[in-house]
Image (cartoon, rainbow over all chains, first blue to last red; front, side, top):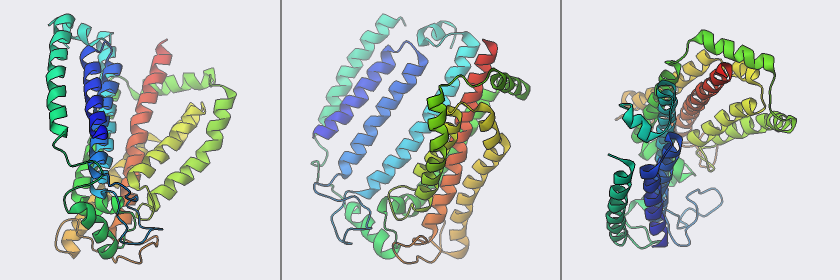
Length: 112
Length: 251
């Protein structure tokens, strides 16, 4: 239960950062924090008490292991987050060049 | 909407959302007892039918291979998008001039950092290659190893040798590698259709569990992804480095 609540907390604290952000780079990083909550949630769902890592190199073939499917999903998640952050930071550079500011509020006044 | 109104509205929504989320997670399975058959079936299938020791890599490149194809395309499109966005603001000529200026000025980084960067490049490159090719056996795979390899190239930059990084990552070569990685994955996917029964069918011999070539197409796809990730991450990072050089040039 605690792990699920950690995921909820990460999502909420990231969203709070996005809402109150005064700088686009800060905003993008807060989005990253929000996405981190999905990693925690996925890994928590696949966790098996006492389970080994799902890599059968030095453990017997039928050892109980944690769920590898959600771990693969988490891998996808990490890649997507990295690409989202890259594109958003590129947009931030573009916004700063064009409008001379990275404050989301000031950008709104400049018709974004 | 003023900032104050937005924050009040946002905090209200956050309170509602937190209530809903906490209510939602109470319905999830108890921590430590995954439900559903796949937690048990996936590692068993990977080990018995595919001879892949690392079930996570097996799931990524075999069971969920088609999803990973989409993921590859996301990465490809994002690298392309970031490069297009960042290049829209400069000409090649400007970038060359900025780099030349940087070279003249000499690296401003500390000697200790330069030495550490130079020392680490080799080991990190080796580790990256190891992680990519052993994806089916030990923790790791194409994505993880690819980021390590791109990190090694970034270390060259951290060592303060901007001129050197321009030599080790000729932009054209990186772009071609990006496309080759994505294309190779596509080809393996289509090979399943040609030589097997469906797209992403694992058509290669599975080999012996624990050997480097076990898992059929799994290690092949891992290497394809490794090439693509290395190129995509290098491309993105080097575009940002160029931006920084341009700013130095302006200042």
